[in-house]
Image (cartoon, rainbow, N blue to C red; front, top):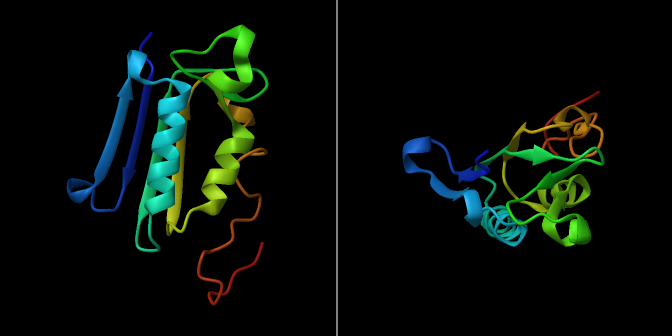
Length: 126
């Protein structure tokens, strides 16, 4: 099974900056760096799309091409880590698409139950 990881940022897509990691390039370190670089440089005019197609674990971790049981913490991406990265970005929006086992449990770990707009002057309620 191929591991796929892609980050887009800035809409419209024809003008988007992309990072595609496939197969052996989709290591935990490479995924982590691409996330940090993309989310860290996104502006309030950007939309970030994170797409992961691969394996997931019962404890809600994304398995990379170099994942090993002996070093799960270092060779996987935990949902808590994604949550921290998503919340720290200045991007206008982050769309997270997960195509992996146990992704159904993600919303409680990564996504807000009540999304809060980045522009705090906008009215909102839950």
